[in-house]
Length: 483
Image (tube, rainbow, N blue to C red):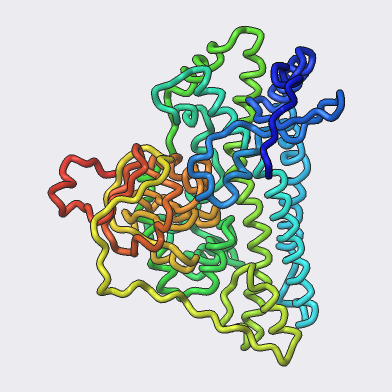
């Protein structure tokens, strides 16, 4: 492309008139007001008409390419009104409808269906599951931006020394996954004989409930599609071993409750002129609701998923060809074909081979994003498949791609959390902070760099994972263990 000099008549002339400069300025400020954040606006003039080609929030690009969907996620800067509209839709429509779907599916007696009707039931459950996944990405994920927006506004207004101080104003101890964990731990203590509930038999006499009955009760009340399927498909020994681990933390892991929250709220609101405090309070309210829903919505979503998995378990029970298939939503089509297609043979699914036991890892550091304060030292438990969860032991450090909300029942056992994906608003980070655990997110290739059993140090203040540094190493002296 050739470079051509401007005609002499235009070389000394400003490219824009004063009127055009003012029009561009007013348009940019209008967009900034609408989206509640400074905008990167692309524009052009055609004849005398100004056209806005694109407007997006000004964000830092550092590290964005490393995270799945992160560039898209950070671009979701919505106004307070848009966030309020999303909240209304989520609370008044989507969550009630999702709960109703899960309850309706739960009432269906799959065992009473013939093979053809069972296949159709699985297809319907898969359709419903896909529908709610789309709703989740279209509505629930954008609403999560309320927390990010609040954090940005809080740091700008208050200018705290700790950039994560704003998280102390968000809900703690009231998340559904935390309530679920309390119930699970309580029921696990019953299996170990610490608490024995009584149940009446048909003739009115009291009897102690059997271990099988208690495990069935746990599975039915778990609110975790992962735990339900694991308790339904794994051996009794693995079930008992995991529940025994849960019972060990009864009364020892309690969610955080910051005593200074009201002081911080007061300081935040007083950082604004009186005329702007109502708007600041509205943003805080939206952020608190968004933070709670960031975890709770996945409990509701998990109830729908659990009903799809229940259909797959029934198909696995009936079809010998389905024996080798993993009970996972991604395999729903294969389960259906085992029921309706006599010629179908499911693809073999082999578990990824473990790292060679002779391979050693040299002490080094992995860097991610600090997402939960504290320092923990302990053996790693690398979770690559859901089945790995039942092997979790108290005091281990959870290392995984990302903590699915249906996996959070192991967090009370953990000493720390390390995830490949996400930031401080990923589910694992939220639950880790609830339990006061150090957490690091966004660590590239962490599941390959670390193996189960490796002793690691998790520094949630700096976002650094150190491999090969353990309690038996003199260099570890003085480092505090996470409680």
